[in-house]
Length: 180
Image 1 (cartoon, rainbow, N blue to C red):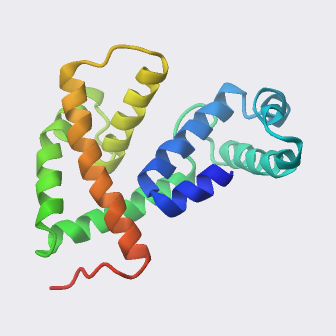
Image 2: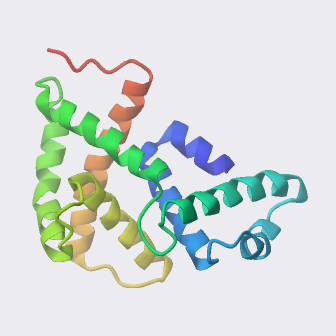
């Protein structure tokens, strides 16, 4: 809970990846707060447990209510993608951010290739990017090999999303000027 708040303030891209991990953690425990209490919350200091139980319990309730206990993402996480997508479009439309455009166009061939491979036509480009980063994170956690091609794609996508997250932070603070 504390980690998610800190990440949301510091880096929206890392926050989203973290929240996807939390969703998967809750799925692995059947969105059952009793299992979460034993398998997750019990590892934390006693004084942190009540707040964690409330947070995880609320997320489990939301996942059941939104029908994402098997797959998909909570609306709060989809809203992050929507907000980032709006900012992404505004940055591309502005002539003030050529480095952002360059990072996007460097990542674009990889995005197109990933979209063709996974067949998720309704998925936004940004969601494709986050899915790629999350997939590589899972591979690394499993200590599996990452191909040179995948590493190259992830590098371009990471740079692009890092810039977007940086601009998101500036926009949130009122420091981003999109108008020409």
